[in-house]
Amino acid sequence: MEPVGYAQSQTARLNAVFAALADPTRRAILARLARGEASVQQLARPFAMSQPAVSKHLKVLERAGLVSRGRDAQRRPRRLVAKPLAEATRYLARYRSFWERRFHALDTLLEELQAGPNTSQRHSSKGDKR
Amino acid sequence: MNSGDLKVAARGEREIVMTRTFHAPRSLVFQTFTNPDYVRQWLLGPDGWSMPVCEIDLRVGGKYRYVWREDQSGREMGVSGVFQEVSPPERVVHSEKFDQAWYAGECLITTIMTEHAGKTTVTLTLLYNSANTRDAVLKSPMERGVTASYNRLETLLASAASRRVAG
Image 1 (tube, chains in turn purple, brown):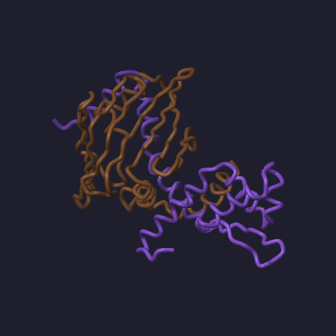
Image 2: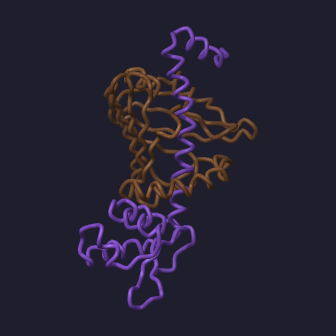
């Protein structure tokens, strides 16, 4: 890894997390690992995929810091690393809540407008100080 | 109520996509997105901020300008941009640039509206100039005050995370 500024490397990591989450197979792998660690073989089974194909997805997840390898040298079980996932989800949730507040206000406005033209007239003249 | 049906996703490297359905016909929803008298009633800033400026010249090449002001401190956040496509009542494409370089570079926003059975679904696609810009926007809210409800979200997050992964 290149030594980069903290904020910059954080952003780069976040980007790797979002990129990793963009693929449905990788999301499914994470969902499986959320229930407990699993070997590559165990992970490949439900996806009708070859082990190398699963390994490729795992590499992306590992690079994003979402998956780590267990100690058992034989099975090399993969396990979920929850923190970066939680971080990415938290950013999305915060962003979402900011917009949802606006859209709630829009729901109210649309309700008023559909209730009748007089209602909205009254509403908009309230803030009119001319 | 409608709460909970807003979908937000980071798509690809440079996009944020939001989808939301409103209980109103498309022609009316389009009005509320493009008429400044309506926009100022819902395009809220963070808590404690008002919107003293809301100007929209809705035509290709036309400009818009929004300013939010924190009433207590007098601090202002301004944003402006240019309309690149205007097709009422279904599609608008416009650029977005904040005065204070809250994030570096520009964003291109595509708004698409579709109507089914009297309800209108709005899809907003925000395309940033780089992956880093997109993620910087997701990381830092318009104003730190937005994080007041942070702790409450922490609790929601665990379940949201598992649902997202499973979905």
